Image 1 (spheres, helix red, strand yellow):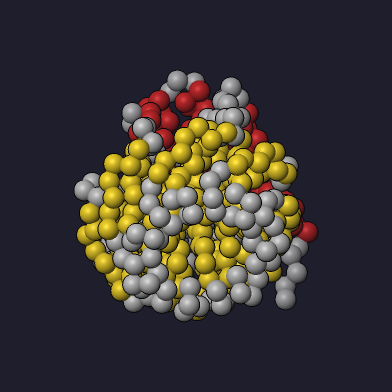
Image 2 (cartoon, helix red, strand yellow; image 1 turned 90 degrees about the horizontal axis):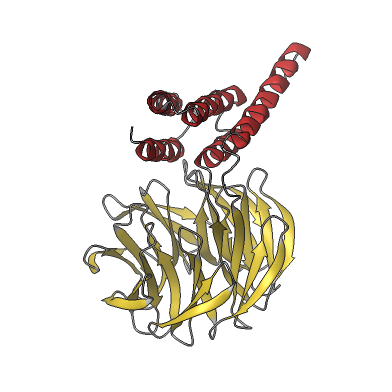
Amino acid sequence: MTQPTHNSSKSLLGITIRIVALALVLVGFGASSTFAQTTAYVANRLDNTVSVIDTATNTVVSTIPVGDTPSAVAVTPDGAFAYVTNAIDGTVSVIDTATNTVVATVPVGPGASGIAITPDGAFAYVTNGGSNTVSVIDIASNTVIATVTVGVAPLGVAITPNGRFVYVANQLSETVSVIDTATNTVTATIAGFVVPALIAITPDGAFAYVTNGEGDTVAVINTATNTVATTIPVLPGPGRIAITPDGAFAYVANSFLNLVSVIDTATNTVVANVSVATPVGIAITPDGAFVYVTNRDANTVTVIDTATNTVTATIPVGEGPFAIAFATRGQVDPFASLTAQVQALVAGGSLRENQGAALIDKLAHIRRSIDEGRTHAACNQLGAFINQVNAFIHSRSLTASQGQVLIDAANALKTSLGC
């Protein structure tokens, strides 16, 4: 193997330093932005509590009593409220994340299990395994405004990023129901599963990944056609599944062998398995840096570094931790978020360091233009950023889904500026 020369090593080090320096510049601009704090909410099924983890220190900072057998958690997009399903009670506990207290309890259906919240934060969809229905909660009033009949024993639920469709895994009818959120009616029923359990949808909305609880596989639905595009062999007992914010990887909790499988979504193959302890719940931090896994029998949460797929922390929580979700409160700086995504792509090997530096450099110029009141220039620079991302897609440095996440974020900035 050819060894790197002293000059090439110096060049690589210089690029690395430049990425860090540019990232610090972006953090420095707009320093008046509110600090965003991310906390994890863990539903402990056996002691009827929710543990609140400060992700900065990986310690439990609060324990909240909820209903009987809390089974799933979803958080509103603004991070203000955590919604927890209570399976035995047939209710949803609403937690104010500012005070970590229950501020409402919403009756839904028997066996309330899965829950997902629309991207605009307006509605929560709850699967009721005991009545083969999905309850639709109006978040503004915390009342049920619709009940949708689906398949037998619905469990997992996920919503497309555009908020138009809800996908529901029906375990005993071995189907997935697709609900149109505009009418709250089932518009498609997809077959071809083996006790489907949980669902996660890619950030671009193109695919839904469904764990087959008794098939030891993950089925991939093409959401454009609502057909199963492929099936991925994993390990025994696949349950909850989460996809990284850049869409590059899916993490699957396999409870039977105490392992988390890592799926490369570009090839739909398992590229790593991480040893944990009776994994059940799984969620990925908003910046994509870490995976948090609830270990039901060990009463702990394991933290996995997505750059290395190694365990970096183990956190004691309540009894029977079953599900987990993240809440980010405070103003999230879109530039810091975009920078973190680019850095993650560099760390994961999708982008070379000089490519990452080029994108971060563009972000620094855009931010400077905005801070100086040069909106027109910022709009043009955002266009250049998007063009650069598209060039990386065309050169296959980035997959279409990885690039689209960056493009969507840049277009959101353009919209906010009135470009």
